[in-house]
Length: 98
Length: 241
Image (cartoon, rainbow over all chains, first blue to last red; front, top):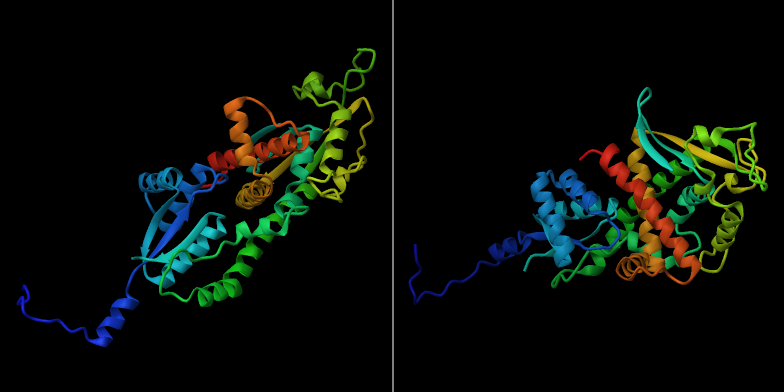
């Protein structure tokens, strides 16, 4: 239902906190000249369970654009994924979604 | 070098390694460990976990990462290097083959080179291999010690090649070591690139056709590509998604 135009919405501080906590995190993989393209695709399939098509598309994004957001979600899980990707020696980081 | 899968038992095999190829392979554990390279190169294997994250306390996360994640990664990488080092010692066989003598006549006592499908002309001259070993010991490589005892003139398995003979190595490996080998090969290539910018050297070579003037650079490039060939094989034939 649309708000009345004259109404001011006040955020409940607790709700605001909850929103901040649930702000998604992104797992970002950065391009590097060493890792073989087929290997990067295979790692995306293993770590995230992506189809070959999706994993290939993300790998090509990394290759052509310099980086790709390969997963978005909760911080703890994002940290877990980044650790796994680094275990495969990919240049992976996490960042808070804007 | 030949690289292939074999059944009964299932394994992957790197065979017919000439002395130069064996030199590259036996250097894998030390290269992957970054021996002789600037310490900063190894940081590439342990990147900071955060990028551009306003409002997040980076120190806290990075500190936790260093405390819990980095040691775990370091252990994983070390296990891969140790497995490769052990495989190179325990799963390597050596054959000594005869080369064409100085007068051009072939040594009739040993015709293994023909059996192995190796033409003497395809094999590196012993002087060249020695030259390469010396290059490895020069400033750019800074490796004072050979990777293992097999690099000495007498092999660990007791074989010893004379001037008109050549040691040919074969390494037979279990399929479940493939992942660890890939990891070690990747560590080595990442560190080599970090330290010596091999990828851009290769790119330059591909676009201009001009090899690097410095023999050490050429050698690093060859070693880097040699590792890449094995990685491609593992990716296509041994590792599963």
